[in-house]
Length: 299
Image (cartoon, rainbow, N blue to C red; front, side, top):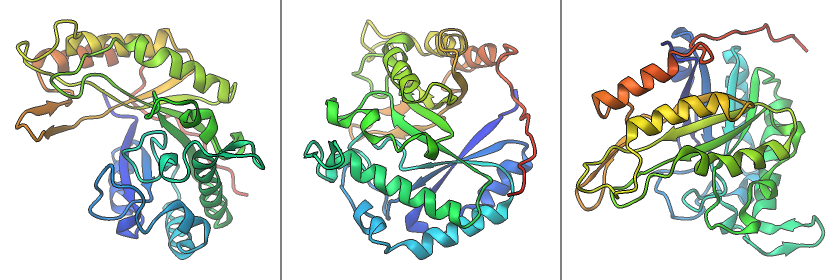
């Protein structure tokens, strides 16, 4: 089945708008989803803020780049979904609230300092992009399903910038990524985060913006692990039946080598059985492979 939405990253370290990638996606007949990440080369996780820190953004240091990016997005003219600061509730990315005061309470705004800094930066960026006339952008607030660290201050509501700044709500949902991990079933990964997203806004559509699980030899996977084909089948069924506000799901087709030489193969075609489970799941008519677009009115 055709892909309705395709992701492209846009790192601030590149200092450009990924128009080449987006043109390819659009010519394919798909809607681009852009992860716009304030992150500098070499894009290493778990390293804390770099020169594109939230405080520098709020101080106006990167206004010229934001304006240039917004102008290019506007001139692209086609609809685009954009995520600023994906998975901000995980410490692997430098825009996590953990690096900006974390759980320190700010009585003036009645929020924790870490998440509040992200909220301010998110609004600042969106306001600036909108001011350049990029009305073809729809904004998605995209969190990891569970926060890390798993503490109240790091929860999605503390980061939420408000419904005026959000068109979509997004979740990352990963099963087993490493050989010695369990592979939790889909309800345990989605039920609570889904309800939390629903409480943020009663009407916004929800997207499973990243979801995947690895395929590991039976000799290394924990006995309790759900095998990948069954996990994929469960996800594609429950996303459309158990969670009525989920309107899209994007499988994260990735593979990497770990420090111990093992591989984490999350690709949808890691085995014949996994690929068939995916094909069978998306064959259901609820999963649309082609876009249904309405013209964006001029303002």
